[in-house]
Length: 307
Image (cartoon, rainbow, N blue to C red; front, side, top):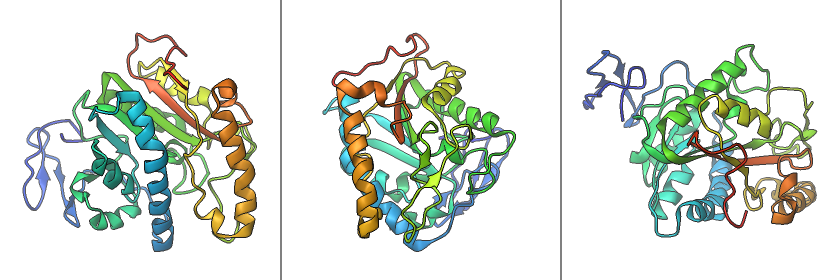
């Protein structure tokens, strides 16, 4: 790890971490290094919401991330992985126990639950725009629903004028810390889909938010491709979405179970190889995109077997 400001060496003192190059000083929070540059992400500080996220991330990690990473790297491999925007950090516990060399960063309030994690030493407070890692450190960097929350007003869907510049900065940092033959995995709601199933709802309100397709709050596959093309990435593929979401909270009520059924049906359908062409269309509410770090790959050429 390095200074997130200048990438100089950190002193790692007990009270603070000082950069030996630029002199920047960083503190600790609950024993965890605070390497955030700029403001923190002001997400809702709610215990119930954080506990739900932990359950949801457990489903995601066991049912989707572990099988996907093993298909990419092989069952016996131990790739070095960064979870950018890891939230409550549940994925770090589960993937570490599964044998992956993983660390997580976040700059939001859900980090208050980190002391409860088994592998809290693998968690760092940091901002995706200023990653505290050397160039080409990781075999993979992944983030789930991070980009829609970049370049917006707080934890809302109100997009700021400089939203694209801020998103490009995170994309550039992700590409910088990934090895040349490594991968980037991004996921979020699909801007082309007319409903936003994942933002603006409460436990008592299972019905989704209307999503104007022209609103830049969410991203399409083309939006991601344009961002990462500017960082030197080129090869990409749209991955299946089945088993990504468990809809844990929705299924606690009958209205939510009714709502979850058609969504899961669509997820399962577009995850079939024969219908892969629908994964970046307006039919699919959720995108999962695998991006090749190497600039030598032609656009659209990355096609993992079985996907």
